[in-house]
Length: 143
Image (cartoon, rainbow, N blue to C red):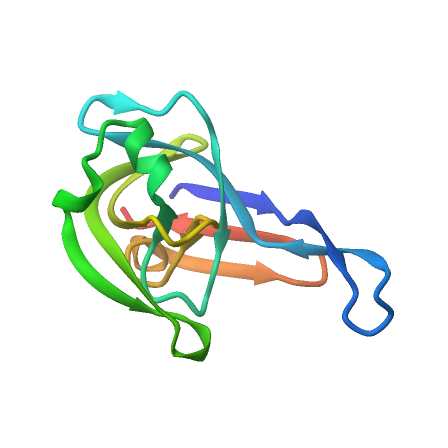
């Protein structure tokens, strides 16, 4: 059984009520992206989003590993407030610590934050645990 633990990472925000700077801790995963035999030399920090149906990354991450973005499976992605963007799906490999997963990531020129969603990330693991009190996430890989 392969289990990986990720500590939540701090994000600076402006508090909505006080309008003062604040910190919020979010479940984020640091990983490397590969397409075919091209491994990105930079690490990606992606938000683990229980509300996201699919994995969605900014297009430039795909371009860094040689993906011709618009040749992928075109898909209309709906966001909060029925906001629609076009994404292009490509099969890639994600390296998370000592575990790798092969999955589909949709890349979009209209999106800026790498997101890991239910289809393509959560479904690759036997268990996904969020511990809000202690600010960590743990995943157990399927065998």
